[in-house]
Amino acid sequence: MKILIVVKSKHQGNTQKIAEAMAEVAPVTIAMLEDLKCYKLSEFDIVGFGSGIYFGKHDNELIKCVKGLCNKKAYSFVFSTSSSKNFRKNNSSLIKLLESKNKVVLGSFGCLGYGKLLFIPISRNHPDIDDFEGAQKFILDIIERYKFQRND
Image (cartoon, rainbow, N blue to C red; front, side):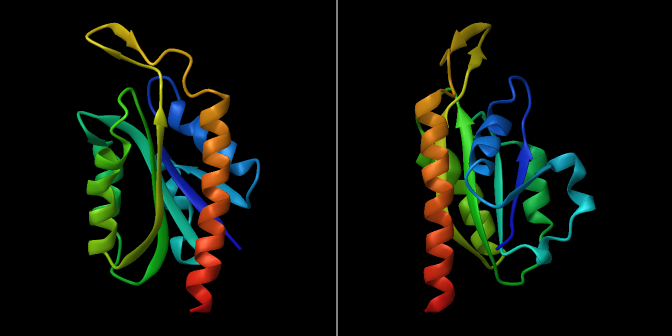
């Protein structure tokens, strides 16, 4: 099984840290969004997309990337880091966009990430060990969901 995680991680590198935690327990290749042209997405069984959340949504460059995907059926997942706990809401627009591109979204993960709001630090010490363990459990669940979907 081959999994690609496409990451746009700025500022504190929180989202990249979450992707790296996933890679510790699963057969994952991490691609920074800027380097995505070096990869052929169709060679991967699952492609995950993650970034920090800015003003309630994923990074604009990541959204633009997903808008440019072909409409061929493929398996994906979404994840994010944010200084707020609105993970489900924050991830929902990217999920809908992927689904509009004929992607089967196997799941969604979000956790706190250190950030600043008007220069005031928010969510210090995140992501933390619980966030990393949650990400690892999440990627293992994604693999199981993929296997189940492929056997249906």
